[in-house]
Length: 195
Image (tube, rainbow, N blue to C red; front, side, top):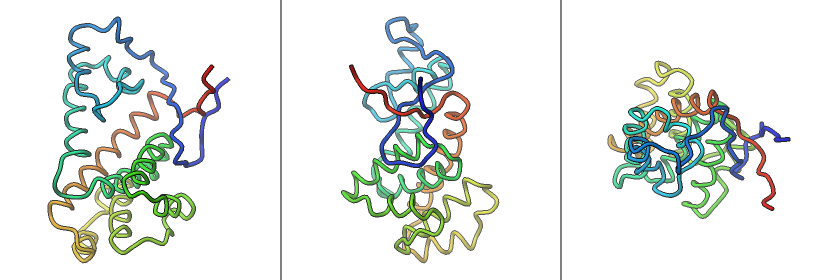
């Protein structure tokens, strides 16, 4: 029996799809072509294999994901993870929140920010820059019209450039969408012991 994970954690749970993922050995040539560019340029996850049922969407989604989260320039990778983490916390996507918290901690070589966010949520004690990033991403995830000119001014006051603000908008918006898709397609479940 699997146990659904309900609490935010930096330990990335397994993800159990409700739709049977495409099996690589049975994938069509079109599916294999769409799977060439995986989101993190590493292994092909059950989530991506589930998305492979819609080849045309996956062919667009993976390169877009890679560009938003991994392209050089603009906002740091760790700060993009804060934006994605904020959206995932708003949407209660336990799996994505764990992935982004884990990546942030590894990039920063510190768990301080993610520990504080998971412990105190919106009341977390953050640096002015992280506070501006987190607050903006939360507003954007809740309801995009809530993030307005005053919030943009706070980002600029915290030292973000226009390019960094664009990266924040993109990373937050991407996960506003991805979190909702993950909720419909599956559940985060406790890791099972390997035999």
